[in-house]
Length: 170
Image (cartoon, rainbow, N blue to C red; front, top):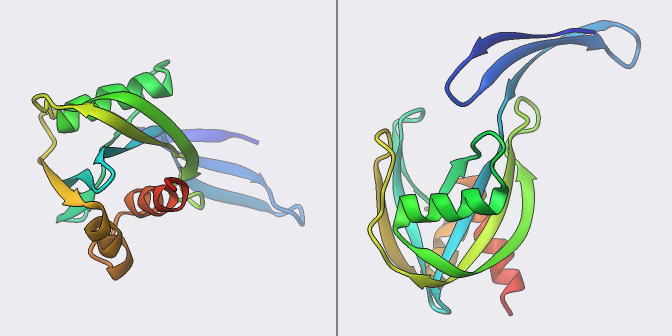
């Protein structure tokens, strides 16, 4: 059955899908189609990371987040991670680790987030996009984990990346 694109934006498409449900009844579902994204945990050293204060227009709040960005058409995910890290923090990484991927909100959106850890960082000047209000901040690792656990960090991709790396880093 058909999927109709009802809106095409700069980064997303909104669609209505009409399909048969398990009992044969016709079901209409709204969905957001997203090209996917990369998420990068910049590890400065064993005891420090770089995290962003990032103003999010949609919710009208400044959140603590790690760098992330939307994939460009045909762009390999690691190239996107390198690009986003440099744009948002200025850092260039000598070592990359792919953690895993997750779905942001699979009930309404197909966005796949690829999680990376960037290490052996060389600093440089950030180059945020015109619509980004970002402030890179160095945070102690123990403080970042506390922030994830006490609700200071409200961003799911950041919490997931921090807790995965906490478990994996040894």
